[in-house]
Image 1 (cartoon, rainbow, N blue to C red):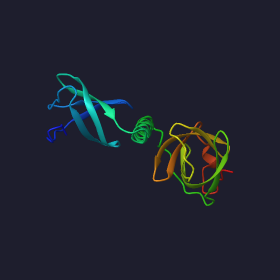
Image 2: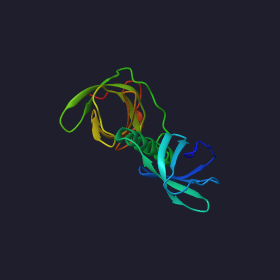
Image 3: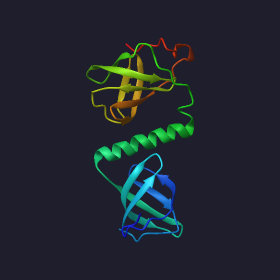
Length: 169
């Protein structure tokens, strides 16, 4: 949607934390405010920074929280692209677990787990990109949605331990 309120179709060509490029027949002028609704990223506001014959690129505007959400979504999309979520997720019988940060152990609830990662509920703030340990397994915080964190394990778990009896203590 351009600054005048007109809506146009566009295709996302490339996306990063700082900007997105689009292929589109409608091209804003440089510096024009643009609002885009992008699959997997949601509503993105920005300013047209580059114009080409095939489309345009915007610089993303937003709060740090919004940019953190975008970073998590981009990371998750990249994992999907390379096959990071191809393993089955299970719900463990014992949902209580310990998550370790640099300076403390935190009680979390395991919602599901796969060979590649886990979804955990926590009341403790974990910044996106933070390196943590879930039990004995190193992981990185990929995204946060309504108090649920998506973690990607540094190394895939062995298939024989990923079952409903798995524990992270």
